[in-house]
Picture 1 (cartoon, rainbow, N blue to C red):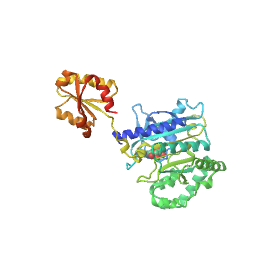
Picture 2 (cartoon, rainbow, N blue to C red):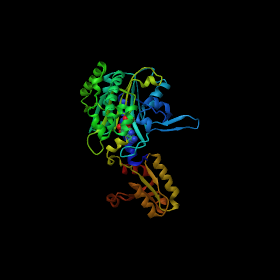
Picture 3 (cartoon, rainbow, N blue to C red):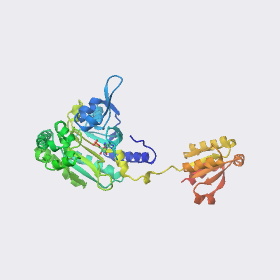
Picture 4 (tube, rainbow, N blue to C red):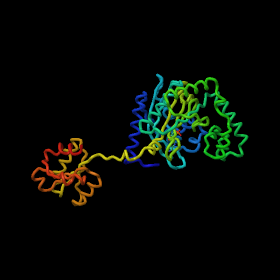
Length: 411
Ligand code: AMP
């Protein structure tokens, strides 16, 4: 769990704002659902046998004896909210969100136990056009924050009939290789066999290379649907690769599934992903409608952006009384500056040398120094903290013109 502050925080805010403005153009409105839900929301929504639910959730019994869980992802809670708040009476509806997620994952680069996701859900319209628009929206978010070197992995999990037939074939195939599978995949075989397909284990990968391919199990409709999605992605000119082993970790996906990965730099893991879900809304008691969504990991996007750009500080002026006798006089100047929306610091503790060190540390551009003489004559001594300018420009000004002078100087 990482503290977020300074330049990193500004980076986070920048990404969030850019992402939101892209999504606003695509008709999404913001939703903020609770971070804590009844555990059942995720167990039923995501699926008991998924890694997220079986191994990674922060679940506890609260004081009322209810099992509750810190949300490990956004979709299940938002669909729950959309149903309980009756937000899906006129369809389609589109929600975007940004917030904390919690997974008891093994920490490593780009993987935290508390992390943040920016995500979108487009509920109530099922069409390859919508899938293509949603994938394009996600790509546009990356472009808007300055990330261009990525690829989109795309797959289709087909409809329920496809998934049923394919799962059977996968189980049959892996059962023949059970002894050679990694211990983790041996467990998956009985609980969540499709997950073996995106195992990172070397031997598993080898075995997977000969595994059945989902396209061979598509119903006619599923095949046509996926073909149209690909055609529309081509129309958009998006760079994507079809990866038939992309199953994603959560049970609710059907049809289109996708994931974004960087293609340059050190970090090549997924930065975001999503897919269509046919059953989720009805599962929470809503109408039998389909939805599609995606989420980006904010920390992963932050990793891809250089910090330089975000290491900015507000231009600030320091008000420095030389002794306590000038405190009140200086304090009213300080207030006058803030009333005029100027960032100002009132630096009045310690001796003069300590005060000037604070000015340096805070990176103030300008110091307004007020001693006995300035106070009695209604003036202010100005010192430019930038060395090159300091000698040329240091001077005394009338206290009445401080606001205008500082505004010009900090431009
Ligand atoms: P998922 O919900 O697993 O599809 O994850 C969507 C995105 O969230 C991933 O592509 C990552 O960018 C991000 N993500 C998932 N788990 C973590 C984690 N433990 N730490 C940081 N980011 C994560």
